[in-house]
Image (cartoon, rainbow, N blue to C red; front, side):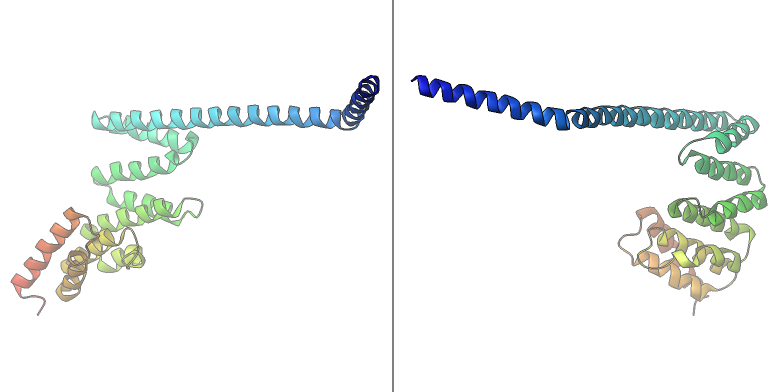
Amino acid sequence: MADDSFIREVNEELRKEQAKAVWNRFGPLMIGIAVLVVLATAAYVGYRQWDESRANRSGDAFSQALTLANEGKRDEALTALAELQKDGYGAYPVLARLRAATFKADSGDVAAAVTELDAVAADSAIPQGLRDMARLRAALLLVDTGSYADVSSRVEAMAVDGNALRHSAREALGLAAWKEGKAGDALKLFDQIVEDDQAPQNIRQRASLMSELIRGSGDAS
């Protein structure tokens, strides 16, 4: 029994010595790692809060600009959007540019609206989806004020299978073609929309009406 007790005491002392040696060798490193983990976590949480705060402020500013527009305060809305373009965060500066272009178009200044939309579409720093949306908006404005070539130069590349905006792009092209007397080309585009099961219902309905109108007029024969 005495021998067993002695052996246990020796083993316990050895474990203590080993633990002490490990701590002396790696303790400072482990403390350093723990401190770095705490600091990194604090920095990440702080950044998230800062990021969300900036996004929320920009979102509120954008909503306020839309409210001003809905109240008929166009100049104040444009001023608010201009400030958001300069100081906004995330996608809000681009959204402000798009909305400002819409205001200009609604007030009759289509040329200025198209110029702004083309500038957005040409900005490689902007996400592709927003650039495509700007091209589409410009094309839809040019259906009434421009030529088929004007519309085509902006949305022809989007009117292909697989593109999420193909239905609207084909509608813009179809309307521009029909306006320019290219009834056959217009009919093909509207039929493409009607035959596409993924086309939104409202666009398919308009395309169907246009197809019936063109066929009924006999212009496509």
